[in-house]
Image 1 (cartoon, rainbow, N blue to C red):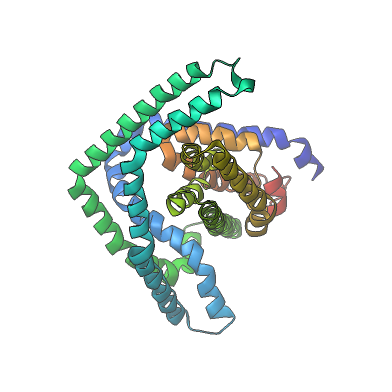
Image 2 (image 1 turned 90 degrees about the vertical axis):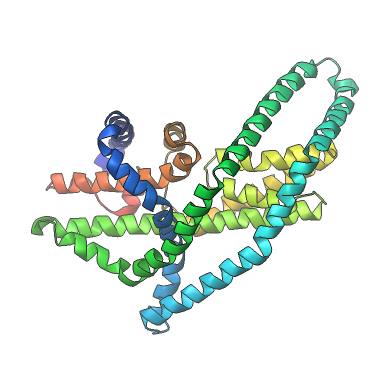
Length: 372
């Protein structure tokens, strides 16, 4: 244990270097994997969605099977019924409301910009701010906003032009996700034993432990993050609705969705709400900020420790590094998937240390691994 503590910085550096090297090499030999990439990209969305649902709902199936003694196949069918009901509720209630609020926001955006300009001018005229050249920052903000709006509408136009491709992709996901998810529920627990068949006898136990740790980490991260995002979405939506902020549901869902990105996500999620509130009054923008702060305090001190524990206990600098690299390579998807992928890589490296070092100088206890 003392040796591990003394070398913690060394192993933390090795993990970062391994992660960076893997990314660098993959960018240099990507042309070799183009056929595989095409195949994987086709299956990526269905498998990703199915895996997300698997890690959220599988604990419920295990509970039904182990505690209530319900056969697994009946538990799977029950979970599918629940998912279908939730999907129907989303399609019938939530999604139309979100689309309606988004449409209204787009239609009212020019008027909101004018009102925001008025509010800003009133703010500039306050005596305590007269000595600050805020007009310079306003011009820069207007320029940035114009570029953003132009890019956004250009993206929307491009998407509308490829509407057939979008519909085809969504159709493939809707059809394949239930099939993939069913077999994940049915045969997912057989996967470790299937992998161990191809492993030499002396490493079978180690590989089994590795797969168990990876499964535990992914399960904790995905299910915990889903609960955290749902908490943020509900609390911010209710808070925005309570102060009379328009588009409360849409802005709350944005805040919840963005919260999946560590550190940066909450800022991205609150920005639209604060800007819209500011077009009404600076005081309302302040109320939005208070709502978000209270929500984040509850998340950081109650919800996150309760549902996530220490499953992804990483150094803050590590998280920032991963977000920068993954975001630069794969955009928003990279920022979302970078953290769990790094966590899996960390577990794999530590188990490889254990397999190489027969003396077991590096403990493989999960709590000790998480400290690094």
